[in-house]
Length: 106
Image 1 (cartoon, helix red, strand yellow):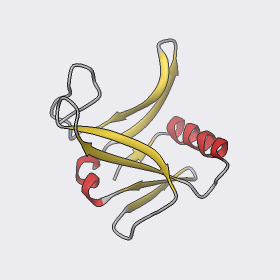
Image 2: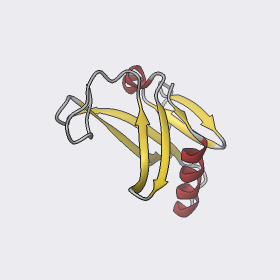
Image 3: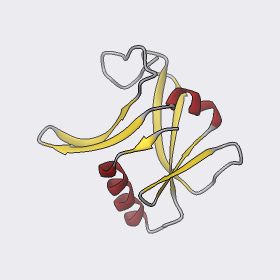
Image 4: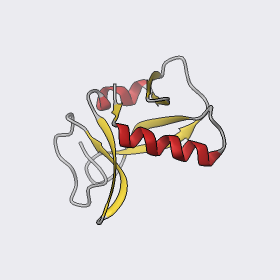
């Protein structure tokens, strides 16, 4: 299962609060596409399927569908806010290579 660092969990909590719906979960998925074969998709979701894997990190519910789970085992989502910009980063030990633009992997 994928994990969230403390900074990522805090930022997701903030974004869920901004949405005004505390029942939302962060869904993380792997989709076919991009230069290297796969890309990540992260969005808020209120629907959880019985085949989804669900975990909670510092009050944030994270949901991964069964097809994406095999690509995300051991991965970690972090949030960085620095001089060169802010955003989420996925550190995934399953990635063999990434594309030049950094938006897809295989």
